Length: 180
Image (tube, rainbow, N blue to C red; front, side, top):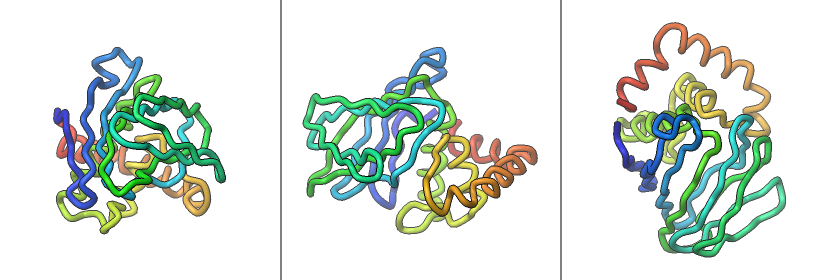
């Protein structure tokens, strides 16, 4: 299993320091290099907390719909389950940060491997969003990533697509191709 994955489109790098499997399900831990102005959309997780620690450079956190927090190197912040959040690089330099999921979450780990693999294969757009709605459904559901707004409205459809893809082996095909 790959320890380090690189998104060829946005150039972010994820190095898995400890996987859920290695920790007996206690944690998933990764170090992320985030390019200038990079980040992810505001979202929440139902089943795990995320602890962010800035390593090199300032790490921005969006908390809820209005609050922003900037972590300086060495500073840590934990986002509890069900809390809206997102991270971003507020600078014009690449930054590094650590993220620790408690408990560990293999689906989160695999969703990143699949997403970066799809990007490498040209199956995402320039923002690394899967071109296939089915692939998006698999990644969203396997990672326990919940996005407010439009995706909340279509989540029942995404969940149905995910369950169908899981039942017919498509999820496993993506895992076999990108995660093993």
